[in-house]
Length: 402
Length: 226
Image (cartoon, rainbow over all chains, first blue to last red; front, side, top):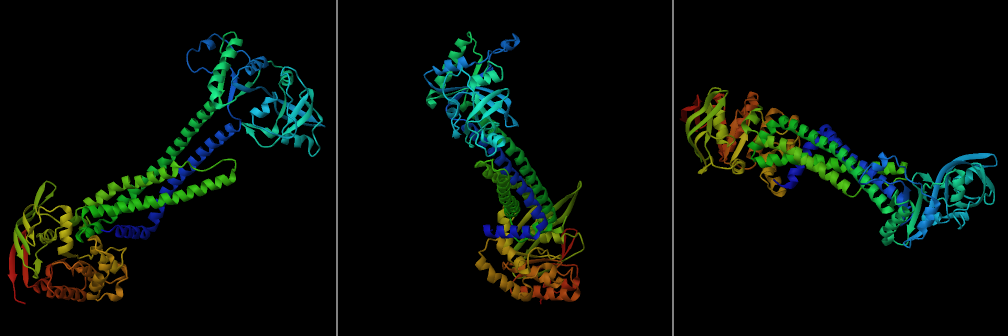
């Protein structure tokens, strides 16, 4: 039998059992579309988070108070020790490490910002001049925090654009005195609108010198210290040095966690990669279900077409040919269904991308290929049993309709 | 052309063995016109199926054109069937999804003939049966006689040496039945061996050679001069 004839015969059967065909195509298409769309979402989440981290700046090492235990004892917990605070002096000490380029101590709190009778509660960062460069932000107007002794408070503030707009409207803000918490600050600059940091909108923050923030929130301790190295190669060395310096300063207790950006990124990459795979796996189950459906319907087709199979044998069809015909039907069903599913999946991803432009949608390259491969494979695997059953029919009994 | 020697066919029905064929010896020459009669359950259909290679004997030998068929593989058997044997059934057995012409084309498709070769063969077969006008109709748009003629066109499109007809008129009225018999006899006149299984002694009596079966044995073999 010629391939073209096999396709033509199977195609003829498919279009003349239209409802059945459409149902099966739908089942496969939904499975494939689910794989494409769910992996699109997983991949989008991964890309989104990766992009967010990259926007934090490059070659960053973030120093957090407290030790995240990766090994050894929970003894410190049992002993009831709390980690020592990170202080501005710790930050100053880190500046002396040769591998380190910039250091920005960060205090974070929430406070109300007032001007002319209007008031808003926003996140308030306390930091130093280095913060701007480390964070990869830029200024819309005016200046950022001036360089100087980080231990000396100073009554200046930098505002995000949204905060500025809500308090001042179109009135120029620079030079105005505002109230943050119970203290007065003079606005010296406005942050440019681009740039985000995880969870916090750059447009809706106020930034004041770190010492002022410590007074404002009545605390000695830092939220964290962000450092940047001169180059990527310095990262390892810088991290070891940071641990050494802080341990020295904290009476031999290594009670900080120094996280490189790469490590965080790699972790998130792994988490979201696994998430995407899990989503793909769940969606793939629907493909297996579609395959079983195909098998079921093909088995029904075999019993409905028993007489026809007997006839084909009487007309000179070998077992192999009968198998080929039934398998071809199953494969065509799953293949066409997979193609339809790809279109629907891509269309769906595009729609979601329209609704949520922030998400960089698009399935990972392997997903559509894997989806189609699984669909067609399930067509073959689940098509084999009915095809074998058809081929094994005894022509005499089949013709007699028994 | 067809040589059966001591052919037995035993069916297992429950724990009983049924001897559908019980030592049949039969030789049919090329171009013969044979009728096969006998009561229900006498084994005539089983014999026809074995001659048509749809069934295998439990014991004995069957030589088709001098070749022992009992040792053929499934593929070889299918090819032997395709090249040598045409089947016509009581219930026509047309594929309902295919048009008359497509039904006639089926054996050629299964045999892997090229589309260019198939077209003239199908046209000739359809033309011989006087079905030109009905070639693109589906079976459900055809009358019983037309359906059987499509089936005969399909059985003969490969130009087999033997036409096996199992009650070809059993599902037709007398007039169309007579037409179908005439068509089959015309094929015999053109040189094809014809074996007709029938209940109808009138039809059976028209053949040059009449075989009668009883309980799995050939009990009568009458030849007349046409």
